[in-house]
Image (cartoon, rainbow, N blue to C red; front, top):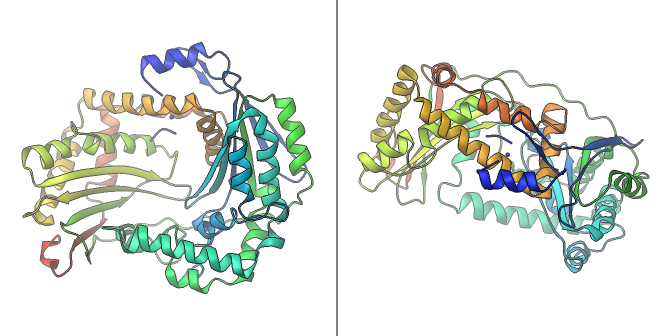
Amino acid sequence: MPRIATTTAVVLGLLSAGPPVRLSAQSLRVPYQTFTLPNGLQVIVHEDHSVPVVAVNTWFHVGSSDEQPGRTGFAHLFEHIMFMGSQHVPTGEFDRLLEAAGADNNGSTTEDRTNYYEVGPSNALALMLWLDSDRMGFLLPDITAEKVDLQRGVVQNERRQSYENRPYGLAEENILERLYPSAHPYHWPVIGSMADLSAATLEDVRGFFRRYYTPNNATLAIAGDITAQDARRLAERYFGDVPRGPAVTRSAPPAVRLDADVHATLQDRVQVPRLYDVWHTVKAFADDDATLDVVANVLAGGRSSRLYRRLVYELQIATDVVAFQDGGRLDGKFELWATARPGHDLTELARVIDEEVARLAQDGPTPREVERAQNGFEAQFLSRLERADGKADQLNFYTYFVGTPDYFQRDLDRYRKVTPAAVQRAVQTYFTGAHRVVLSVVPEGKAELGVRP
């Protein structure tokens, strides 16, 4: 979906804030300045003096897609290690110092990137940048076997809680295994496997840091109550001496496609069965990426959507239905899942889903359905611009995926240009007659509730 928007009230609020965000009938801009330090660190600065708050957002251009088979889970493991203290910041001090200054922080990992962010009062900016620079420049001496073992255990416990012991938690891993060949960078989940996490050595982890956690493989976005001049001075002071790392080169994986439908059944500790349909689509910002977001909204975007009305309200054979386009840096997939009501099996759900997809391909959506989707995306889009941290992350997002920080208007335009004919064509192109992964997650011992091919 768009990478941000809003109701009239929010738009008026943004307009009244003055220069931080510029909106007009035809253009939306988030003014920024950018510069690159001699060590390769790109810094993006957005001034917003409406409130005395500043956000610092660092993207390291590394995710689980940079891992190798047999050594998965490193990117996410490293996200945890980055909070374990560095040479001048003992373990626990990072959070304590920020909390004492009234600031908050966190991080996240995806297939394509790892980010770390802080947000707090503008007078805490120097502290935030010093802490981040110490992690970037002086973490390596403090990466010990004890810290790796401790965070390995934390991540393994997270995998148990969020994947292995969570209802339907292993579905995504099973889908990826079937959607992508074993050597493809999206074949494994971000969290990695238990075996690979157990096999990680101290030198593996240190090597991962040397290769990817370098200033020339990162972008730093600073947004909020700060001037570009002060931001440059602070960035040079705290990051200027961090040495450049090796150049990171990547070769694009070959295009993937399924030559036939892939059916699988996973027996799990669940009470009712759930059906997953997953198709290959397009990567982020490709021509049909936004159109497929609209397709997902028409099919399952809320209670007035086609599948929700049919499955949940009219036939009452499902309790929920979800659809989304997931475009990454290397590839994309469209995922649709529905959970059956007790007493119904997944073959029944699959038949109705296929009927509705075929109807959308044949007749297309109504103009009102497309307009409703566009309005929803625009509302989500602009609402993020109310916060300094939302703008900082968005500036980093656009820089990495499309090569320019201020892509806001062009991103929003992708959705405004979607037509009913484009939605119909997308369904015909990516779903009708295309092959997919069909995963049935059923209660243990009840394989007969799964989809019968």
